Length: 170
Image (tube, rainbow, N blue to C red; front, side, top):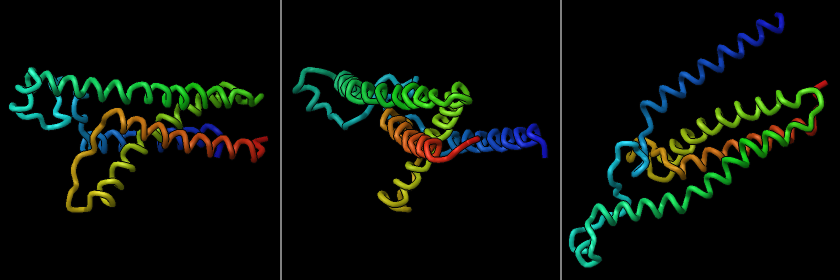
């Protein structure tokens, strides 16, 4: 088996696994509250008309303010973790003499694939173990889910770095 046949076999397997992930995302996930592009308002916490009247705002205004606070709370964390995973780990592998830029490419593809997989796996296990099998629902795609995906990618990339540091690739 030549090197070209090995590469095409891996490419085919990777594309097939990505197609399976796309199907799983299409059938098992939904946008979280407030992150759907068509969402005008969000329902983070149920606010009734009486409470809204006491605060002097409408229910929609209160929900929009609460969602804005949620995004402002999580988005800086997401940015920091995302930059650490894709830029930090990517250029951490550049020290390798023979495969410097290839390692950056591998970092990007591994991080993207594992982040996708982590969101699904953590969502399924959370539903099964925490909520119980009788409470199955679609997995919410929101900023905390993306942070969880990045942490999963970070765990795999740390392991990848440990293997590269211990094993000789020559």
